[in-house]
Image (tube, helix red, strand yellow):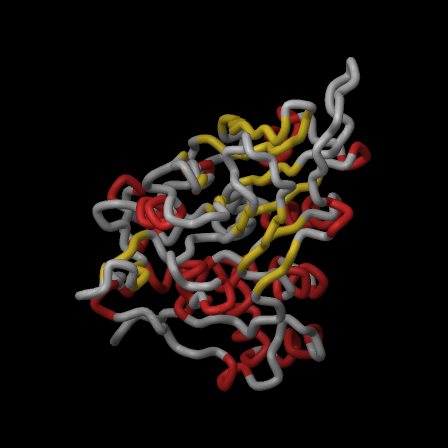
Length: 338
């Protein structure tokens, strides 16, 4: 009997691409006061996975202050596996945070839809919710990545992942599920043009990755929340197929090579790849540093001063009880499903 592939289904998409509201766009300062820049900062945080204490510790370390204009952006996988998924969503909602959908949000939304179909009581509670499609079977396509690129999962590992997603879904309110269902896959941040900025003119936040030479509108939703590497297509130096396995090198290597040929540079900030931990390339920053497994939770903090746009990476040690992965994260096996 083949394992269930709930994570391979894409939950109905409300918004594929979203832009940072204009009132939150960073503005260059002509000068700074003795107290430092007065403009708010963008604080972009890696995979939290329900580790609320760790997220609170990180926000405390960066001195996050919404009243001063700071804005929180999460790279997906806010939830699942960790101890307090509901608490993480509540914190994000209370802070007015932005976020993108990760593979774990997708899996939990699918689990909620499954529970609605299977349980009359659950269905009554979620009836009419945007988090539950009217015709789930028609709106949840199968995996559109090639089978040859995806390592086999054991039935027990797949069943464990499905059970975890159903458990998380049952712990979330209708309002929390609705919030998750509305998250975009791609979040765009227009940066002020500052020649000295190493981030370029555009900032894009996704959960897993992007395929070079393909427009944002044409990116594959499944790949955006699952990919870790690229496979080059024969006879086309700019043709790539996204793959979920880690591969010899991260997709960011080809992204950097492609960006070098572009007049306007775009930096991507992402998560998902716990095996490689913190990734710092020229035009990409990978923020999944394995907090779920007892390592660090990472953020990139972007601000402006009289010197222009500045950014730095800040980390805290895991403040929650970590979990043991189903397989070693060092192996990068998809069964770890990070």
